[in-house]
Length: 199
Image (cartoon, rainbow, N blue to C red; front, side, top):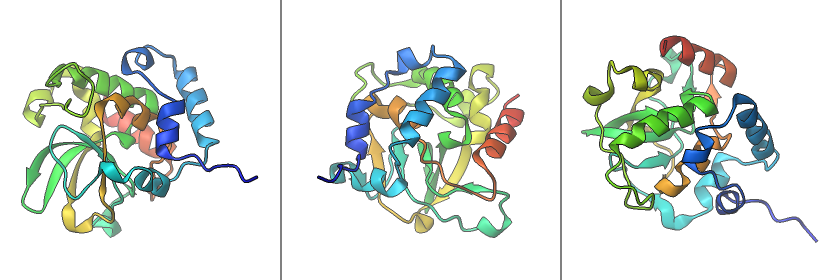
């Protein structure tokens, strides 16, 4: 009998991470969790195709999304993420600006999100919960300095998949999934650069 390939829903059910608990964990714990998740052979396609009810044709500021992306100026970028995990905070004609949390190592993603939760519109942690923030609110504040390397602009015409909306009760789990796909540099190089920029 063939083994069932894990889907994102299975991952969320079997690896439910609670933001309050995860924010207190050690670096070693994060490394162990990522190794365990890596063994499940998760891919961006599995993430996108696992729950059609969560697919969207556009983003709304304050919610979290994953999607496939092919940057317009990829030939001039030192590196980029083909499968961003983004908290959009502003839209403009033809695109939006947001924080791609993949630009931070897993532990720092959680730390930044934990700080950003001060902008949550409610404490329900369900499909209605979103972050009401702007760059003006977090720029220059030391508790949000980790956001600096995550600021990215995305053009809708270069999005190569539907947007996979992630409800707030799964935000911590989404940030633990090892599905970042950097082109032009290794994860370690990107994260090292981000840590330098956030100092």
